[in-house]
Length: 601
Image (cartoon, rainbow, N blue to C red; front, side):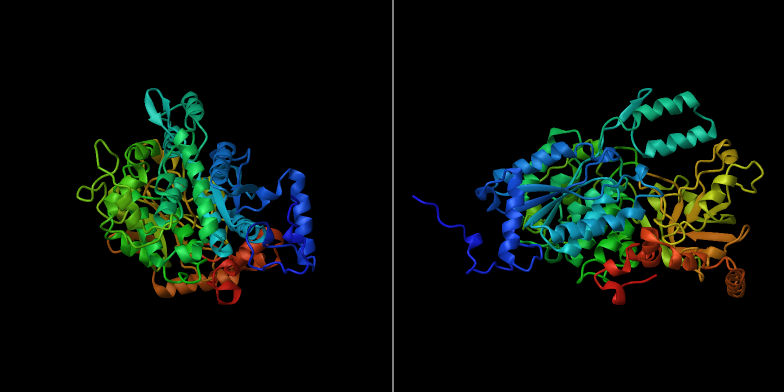
């Protein structure tokens, strides 16, 4: 019996503009049938049959890179996702996008987050995919993927690479990267020697995967679950575990379901989804970077943009306790969180606070998901009950005042000296990262343990990407005396794995011609008051105005604003288009409101 003619070549039947699979998003040759003919002949060069090409297509974003050890397991994850897709009747096709690792991107991976989001959005939009699995892990990859995915608005599901295992040194568990920073501080203070630090360098990252503490990567993985964009079991399983591969296979299965249901992120995500994410952020003592990312993600959504603000995060923090005992706010590692039940256990514990009607990627609400996956608490566990929290409330707090009129963030739960949460002291000002590097260890630096260390000009425009230099090191002469923490303030960021009494994301940034933060001087009394949520410099308004005018006349104020107009390439684009931290440090033209109505700096 002869085969029926291939309808793809029937010129009397128009190609459906809303077609799925290979027939969507055809190249613009001016003849849809010819465009489909050309597409099929080229993909058949890879050995695909007509039967394979007739199935729903699940794209898999491949962010593997030999410069990205956080993503070392992606080849195995790809195989497992493909298995899940093809067992469920779909066709899995992977494609590459930018891959970012914090230690292999200069000046910082945050500088390239928006570019990666553009890459992700355009590749999802341009290619014939019915659903997409976004494989990411390292800090800025997952927010970039969700930003791009929301803007492209095709069905997406996240799969993270998972945390690395902890290592051991002299009988003590260690892991990237809270212990990296703590041990480096000890080395600077002279309490461990060069042989110790070299040996620690071999053990702090013993496997592939993301940092094994509640840093930015782990925080964002937990928030993806809370948002409903990833299955509940997807956040905590170690990168090198068989569980991670089974999660990848089931993600492929879910992706085929999404290809059929066409549940898109702009329909799935609601304001309640973001409120759940913020509740989880506070309960896990998550990374300060997550605040910037959440603001950028929310402002990509046409119905949510403008409804989530820093005040939302602070308000939720006041009623949400810190429950998860992980570094840097606690003592444990992601493997302990996973062994304690992971996100399933945490969400059951938090259920009285959560918006259970929020939708999830499975098509069920969060409440329905929890009711069908019960959890019985056990001990020992790193997850505290609501009745006995690790920290009572506001692990992350938003401060405002004349030093930060648009806001700044403090991870109060990671403070090493709690008295510094309400502290006033004389400022020791560094005008740039280079200035800090040159002077921080000067034996003649006029600094005491009561001083307030100020680092200016590392904000979104002043130092594109807001590098993670906000963890200003303790001056060596003080570290040698045993000082472990000081009040430190900057307009930049710090790693989510870092701890200390550190105020970040001061806005407007110092490079802004009208910034009060930009005119703070040595000796000015700076006051931080967590309870009152205030960040102030005790300088009169007239003096502040005089200094701003003086800086303007001298040409120092607004130099970055002027330089950006003549800067070429991506750096120029970044400096001209990036908005301030309280809006997500995204490009205005990428926000839901677009270039004319978008949030600007």
